[in-house]
Length: 291
Length: 308
Image (cartoon, rainbow over all chains, first blue to last red; front, side, top):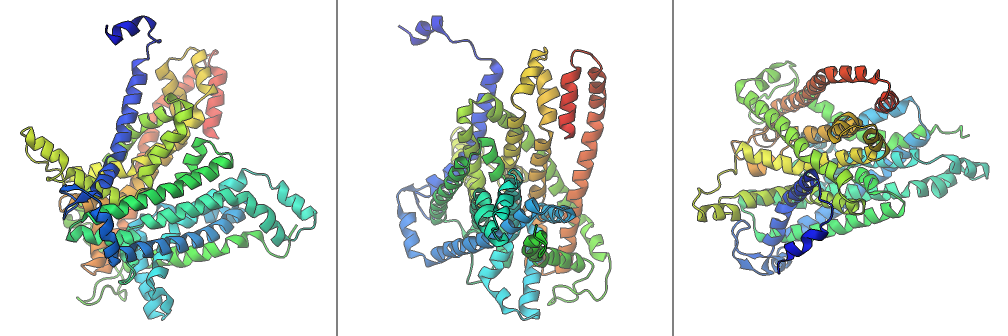
């Protein structure tokens, strides 16, 4: 007996060829999107001198991390920078977003214009602009805080993140009526108390998503980091960039695999929080795509 | 209610931060671009201002790189659009709604993997010692020689920026999906008519967002070209970087950065103009169709939404 022959009589209504074509195309593109990531994950289990040439399977590259303080330091610098940059961007962006949503006026257009300008400026321009600027502030004006590696990285990484957090928080609050805040004021709460007890909790899902996004943006930032970082506080992507010239080792793939897992956990948390606050898949896509 | 402090002061810290760390430094770069490099040991001087650096940027040596970048930028954006549009449509319309969240997550994972690392992944795939090349050689082909060419850069940028095209398009299609498309079908429109007359025009904001989100960062790309491009796949981003890092000519590098921004803005403006002109006859013909009694209400309501 042959299975196809047996199935033919009870065949379901035939799918249109266009639907099949869409499915095939969609799956092909997904494969395309995951190909290099899969290659990196596989390469992290490569035991060999170079990343490019496969030798044999093993966990040596992960073990080698323990013996390489330079890699650990670079990752640690990245994590610290990411955390501080996310804090700065979230604080400034949240205040700005609340101001835009609750105190509209002509100034909002100017401010949105500035945010737009920040988000469309190519990263390389920010990078080459911040290099002489931090040198100017730190050395010519003698503000030694700007000679600190982490401070410079935080400044560079916070710019784009501030715009994202502002957009997110504004979008969240514009969608919700200001009645709660008015009620709170009617019940004799001070403005500060209203802000803390009503406005902030309303904005919280966007604030949280903004924080996580800022953190991942900062971890990912290579271009600005390559320009403003000072020796002694090299973040992880800049370390990889310099390793590119001296030959890529499997350790780099190993760290990338670990960081991918961590990023996925972080993003999963964001999606969970957004879903709990009632967002659809499209809303989450909009949020994650940065507005 | 509150008279003591105007509310917009909440945004003051962000204003100040962006003014000090964005407006001022970028302004400084614009200022540098009118200066010159006085000696081997100095990076720039601005005691004599001129447009000489801009003339230098437009000289044949550097102009070729600008042309190359513009080519990669336009071709990359068009490819992203052609590849991404069916995917976004599939995710928003064809795929079962229960799977949508998963698909969105799948598109986002590469988007949130380190940019540099995924580009290195392509370097591994495309390298002459890689799997594909080895497989090709065993079947009797030449080793893969795409790495360090413009083709590799194009592949890299399409890969890197594709999610930025798919996500806004998905959001746009997701919004259109539903009653309006059904109404169009009920009124006797076929699949293609519905797509071109209803879905695509209503998805316009998403299309614009996607094209801009891909084109702008792509033009300033530095990493993809560095990892995959080699000498042949040179882009303006690298040129600017090298002026600041190795050549130490900040005046020339600044002028390049400014020209890059101007080129991006001009291309966007020209592109918008072309789209406007090309769709002019189509829009005109649609306007005629509105006059027909049976489709009038639907078309009018759609037009209103497009305007809104």
